[in-house]
Image (cartoon, rainbow, N blue to C red; front, side):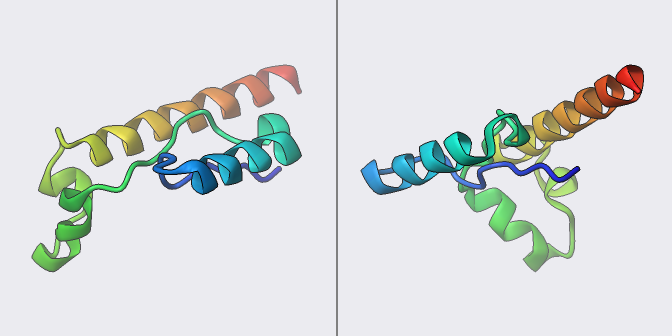
Length: 82
């Protein structure tokens, strides 16, 4: 089963509406975690590092860790229900 996560926090009315529409259409297939735009995450490839190694404490890295945790939790719930 496929899941998705919004890749940016809503910064204006249009992006907020897009996120709302995706959530309305896909329902619980959309993760709660939203990955914000983050300069530190964008800089990481220039230094040849993954974002988590480049700056573990930045908001972008923390959001990716939160998303990973959410993915693991959902997978565990799916396996337990099967």
